[in-house]
Length: 113
Image 1 (cartoon, rainbow, N blue to C red):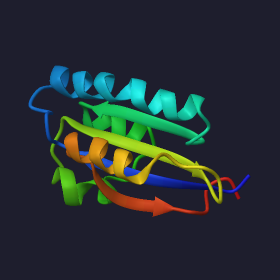
Image 2: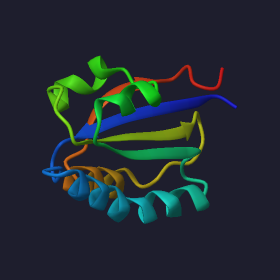
Image 3: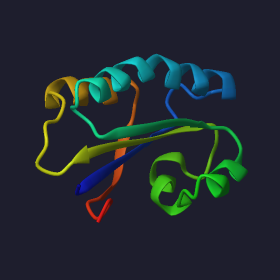
């Protein structure tokens, strides 16, 4: 299976670690519904509250820095799609991401190869 990962980040709504976790919890059910419907191959939504989490999760800060400016708390989101497979409605997806302030920072289409 060939996969494509779209990486997003935001600091919007992340004034405190607790508020960042709250944003992730609010978004989770929608991503889960897309996964259950086969519209995404997977997702990872994480409230980053400590610099060590970047190391533990093997996240490249340089990818996130244009949005986070190296500041935490922040939210990291990876939406993974099967290449050539179904996807969520683009307008719905874009509205959800925009509402949360999530900005596309990177795409990796070599995942799963």
